[in-house]
Picture 1 (cartoon, rainbow, N blue to C red):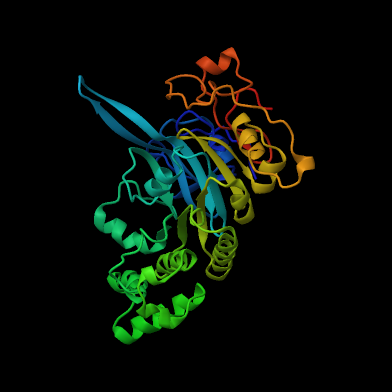
Picture 2 (picture 1 turned 180 degrees about the vertical axis):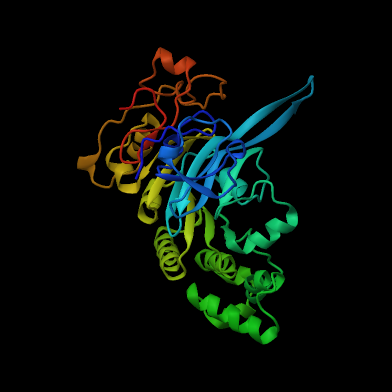
Length: 376
């Protein structure tokens, strides 16, 4: 497999976006090729800024340079200043894989997850789902695509309609998308789904407030899988639960992944939980992707200073393993800058170059990507 490709679609190498491949699906109008044509790396003699690429590596979803900006107005000025919630992130997830997305609160994890499914509209970028760019699909086309892409919300109670019974909540999606017909088929379908998530079929006649937090989250998971999706974005699905219940829900998600062939984008701020369920882990900071690697490799060899700080922040039960930790230079979060590394004001290893030049997300070997000028 080619891992040193220099073919660019926006001036950066394919590998910079975590897409190592030997063959690319491209659209090159000037070359007389149609979208979907497969050409080998050796056939691409020169980079082309117009090149749109997708790796033919069993990727279910590929995100390229995704941005989501919110704008705030000032009472004393007509100028709208952007809040860069997601600022040019790129990643890919193979079918059946789980990618963990971690970072501190407010770094843009949830916004990224919702933008990928277009629950909120992205500002710019490309989102390929099974080879189709869904960024410009109209409302009706997205409606047809919804059953294949589902979302598990963080709050297991606020995301459920308190006036609807569980059977109505779980059966609403298949009914709207005409996957079931008639009351008897709906009842049978709902019963099957509830049993898959560890609930009793009779629970379909109860309301959400009659369940515990863990049971409510099972209902949320049941609603997500009711449409037989291929991709599920799970937004901190266990953060509001007790530790013992967290383990049960994580095991349920992994069992469903194996049984139904699901692909997860698992969002969390808890690295221990992400390691337990994820094949790969991506770290976000202030809207940008700063490191991405295999789960085991990231824990054994964290390269970015921010990732190192996150790992050191994990509580250790054994007193002998506790040690004096390197503190960040600043406690507060700085405002985003148009130049330089965003982590520079807090980085204990900051140098002059970090203030003026933004680091690119580059491959440091074994598909371990990191955005740092001075990889440590």
